[in-house]
Length: 115
Length: 114
Image (cartoon, rainbow over all chains, first blue to last red; front, side, top):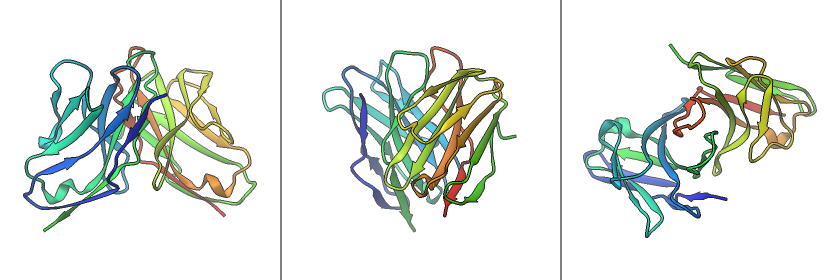
């Protein structure tokens, strides 16, 4: 079975600074990988996804993530954060087989932006 | 207009009572899911369905039933609610077989069992 580890429950960053949120996964093959974001009192929204190919994928609002097979990681980055980026970020994996999107989510990282 | 809507958005239930959470989607998606979110646990899959009148168990199905009477509607049923089922529940949909992993979530239903 697959699993996802987000080692940081909370990350605090100053507005305008760069950001990295860490994600490590465990799966026997290369899964599909995702980052979702949850704003207060809302459901989750897809930020970006990786299926194959270029290990760096671009998402919405200037976010990008880099897949590393050797490290089993899929870290999320942003060059310059804005106060509106304050949210909870979830990394998720899905086996690259089967029809149902049975995602396994990490526990989430709360991002706090300081003025 | 929201494509996945849940009701109720918030509910207080008594231990041992029956709770039904409803979900309606207008995405024309085949797959629908129920997840629960607990602080410190992320989201965990309870049940899912890929066609009307059929449901499948997810990772934590115990204590829950699901019903998919039509493509658009998917309900989660707690026959005997317990304190441990206090959580926020999310419904989601995704498109057809060969899925991409992109789930479309509702805004959540906060359930408190007393």
